[in-house]
Image (tube, rainbow, N blue to C red; front, top):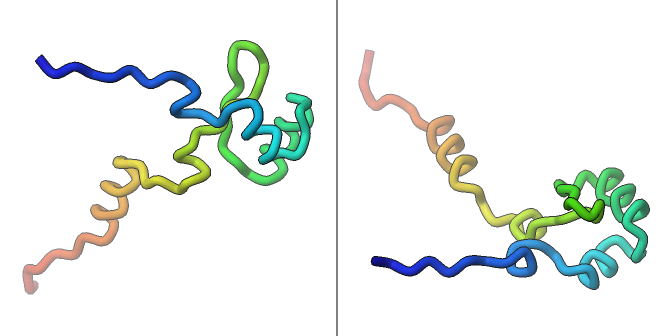
Length: 80
């Protein structure tokens, strides 16, 4: 059987220090305000702190987005 490595929240999301440098403040209310004003996709954790995924900042393509883009670009090769 294949063994799956479990990723922790620190592997997927920005750390508190990284959130502090991104938003310019250590306060969670101000961080949320910054993320909303700049249109950065985020989630709110159970502790009330905002969470930003690395994929959001790095621009890693989502599989569903890539599939939708391929379907939108499809053109039939049949001549009518």
